[in-house]
Image (cartoon, rainbow, N blue to C red):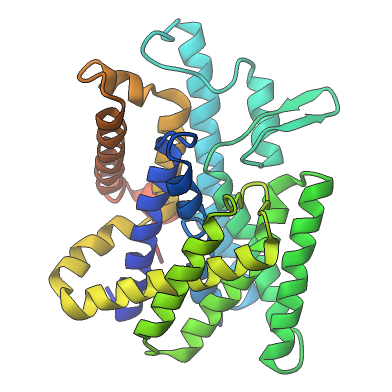
Length: 338
């Protein structure tokens, strides 16, 4: 594992934990925590994507994107759609759940590729894909990012175009929900550019003051509402985007300090950030087909303990399945880095 890989995997490890917690807590009773998590949990993944996309040629962008984003999305779609069909056919609904009643709805939903339900496309209903929408959004965002890098002029010009693209994403989301989470890919362009700047900066260390300011802005922005990247929606798009950028730098700071202060722990913790799309796929399948909270309720009826156990069990299942996938040739090819 290179120094750069360790840093980015630590960042994605934090992201995975925050995504799991945000998905499994009660978003009503734990509203402040949920809003706080959403400001950075998904955005940091786009920052990391921008970091690694910097310097790639078009062929690499497209081939790696299809291999590591689109194919895993298709695999998740197949498991979710077929799993729903099997659960309904064999009447396993007591112990399991299904996402789609009709296979047609499942196929339409995943072809459209949005995480949140869209009204209809013609006569076909488009339901949400679950968290795996992130894979398609990363694919689209990387292509848009690559186009921006070809623009002539100073990097400041690229930043201006990036901000305009983010505004366009927010505007489009207020008009129509586009396929493949295109709006989300657009509003994440500032995070992609941040990743590029970190890559170009090399060994630049996020300072204490920057991290503290980032944390304060991140926390302050979250009091206005969540950052729903899935819908490209935010209470105040400029401030929310700024909170996401500065909050992401705070996460980078934490990763850098872990490497500096506890290198052995950092190496172990970084493993949680490996194969992030596989882990998101696992989370999507668990939440679509399994009644995780229901299983745990057989052990305890205390809501807080149930949620905490659900989070821990989900992370453990992610880890075990990731460990197993690494030993399967085809899974290793699409879910793990080249």
